[in-house]
Image (cartoon, rainbow, N blue to C red; front, top):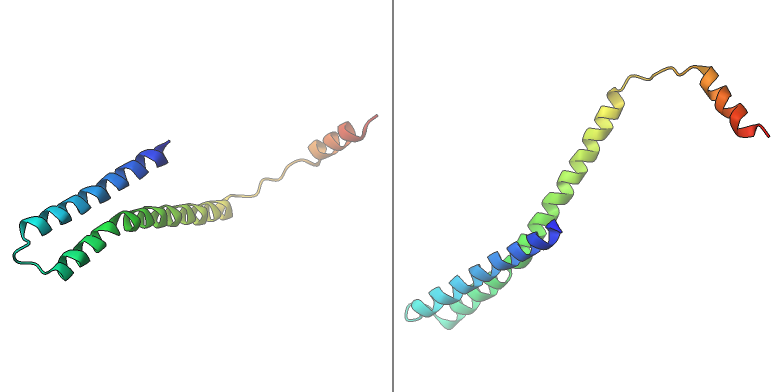
Length: 97
């Protein structure tokens, strides 16, 4: 559910960037060449893809760092000596007919 909201937000942000690039290209059309306007609009259209890539990459890095933190924590846990009686009780319980 959060992913949908994030996607809508990123798409909206990209659309706002494209709108302002178009608006400024119309307002300053006497100072800009058609090549510059085309370049600005093509870069503005790629903003949405770039934002999605940035969020996905940040999410992957965060997940990988959590995995490293878990390994570190598991490495610091002291091993607990369990009594042999518990294991033999389970073995008798499982194999008793």
